[in-house]
Length: 249
Image (cartoon, rainbow, N blue to C red; front, side, top):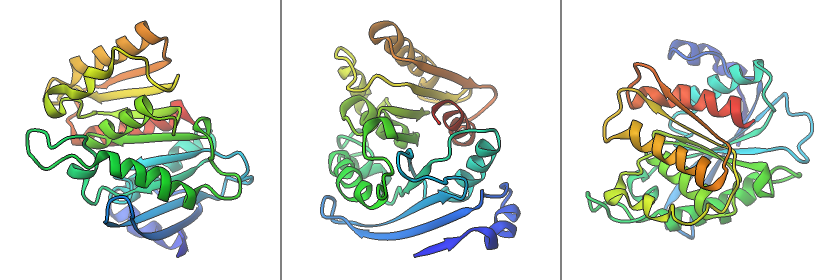
């Protein structure tokens, strides 16, 4: 299903967000063979994208739930001159389970591998038509919180996307299991954007700083790292997304 966005401007403005860019939003219902769950995925194609062949796709985790914010930030980024790209808004329907690699402290996680297969094997072929995406250097992942952990895992462990926005990542999951892989180089060479808010819990500032430093010094990765002043965990989503648009597109 495709709908243009011009009719939604007053709704978005009423919610406190700016206007979305001109373009079309396609909505797909996918019954995943990998997870056994039905997901709603939205794909935004900006009017500014005049040539689909060779275009970049940015996969935004928790994107459906934050679509108004994502599109408003993207409109600002396009006005500032970033590369027009297709946005694949991937839902966080079962985010604690789908975005994490193990049951963890809560006992509710562990579906990450199946969800990553869903994105790579079921979402990407739907999105990447007419020359869009199709190669790691034409893909970006972005996520915040548990989505940040997922984005980091895609970038570190798979050849799916060479660029990643890693915002307030929940790398503390399962006693910091993610950090056990840092002795080996990531699959991709970057660049990556790592960010968080100054007022975040769980030791977010020191461990994101340590991760960024390790990537730069140990593996020569091009890392943009930023701590947003006077910003809490939920409020870090928007500036992190804006920074990722600016640095990765």
